[in-house]
Length: 341
Image (cartoon, rainbow, N blue to C red; front, side, top):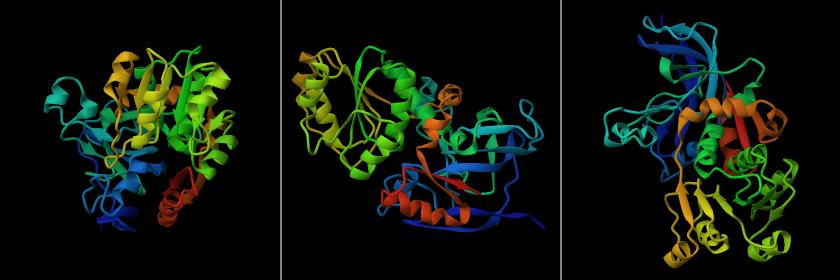
C-alpha cells in the first residue's frame, strides 16, 4: 500500500485545499526530500487570484520557496546523500528553447516550475532533480533558510545593479522583498538609503525592521525630501513594488547617470514616461528575473543576518493552517508567512 501525505493542492480558479495525496517516488536522478519549512510567495497569491495573475496547473501541489532533508535517493544520484539538508531550486529550464541556448535559462520559454507546473513544497514530501539542490548549514534556522529563494532573486538584482557604498539609493516598497533588499543593501555598505512606502502597516513593519529613513509618497514630495536630506536625488532606484506609477516617479527623481532596477512584477500595470528623460539623464534601466545560481550567494548572505531576516517572518503556521497564511497576506496583515508541513 502506497504512503500518503498532506499537501496544499491548487484545484483551479482560486480554489485550493489541504488534502491527502500519494507520497511521490524519485526518478533515477531525483531525490525525495522531507520538507522542513516553506514560505508563501506573492506568486502564490497571484496563482490563487481570480482571474489568476500567474499560471498554475490544476492538481499541482503549491510552493516554491522551501527546504528539507533528503530521505531517499534515485538509483543514479551521486552528488548528495541521505540526511543532507538542502534548498531546492524551483525552476528547471527545458535546455532547448532559444533563451536556454543563449544561456538565459532564467528566461526559459518552457520551464518546469515547482509549485506551478509540477508539485512543489507545501507538502510533507517533494521530489527534486539532483542538480538543483544546494546544501544549507544546520545552524541556519528553518524560517531563515526558507527565504533563500527570494534572497537569491534579490541578489541577482543586486549583482546587475552593483550599488556602491557611497551612492544614494531610493527603494520603493517595504513588503518582504523590499525589506530583503534593505538588508542586502546595508550589507553592501550603502550609507544613504531611503525607503518609500504608502501603507501605514508597512511603514510600521519597516520601522520595526530597523529602517530609519522612510518617505510616504502619498503625503510628501519625495524629490523635495531627498534634496533636503541629501542635497540631491538618488543615484540608484529600486522598484520592489511593480506598480506603474513607481517607475514614472523614479525616472523623474534620478540623478543624471542614474540606474533603475525594476524588480516588482505585475502584468496589469503600465507606466507613462518621457523617453527624453531617459536619454538626457543617460539613465540605465535594468529588468531582472530570478536566477537561481544566486542561491549560494543568498545562503552566504544569510550568515550574520539571521536576526534581521527573522523580523521579516511575521507568522509561522502548520500546513493545516495554509489558508490562514494566504488570508493574512491578502489582507496585508503579514509580511512573510512560513509553513511547517
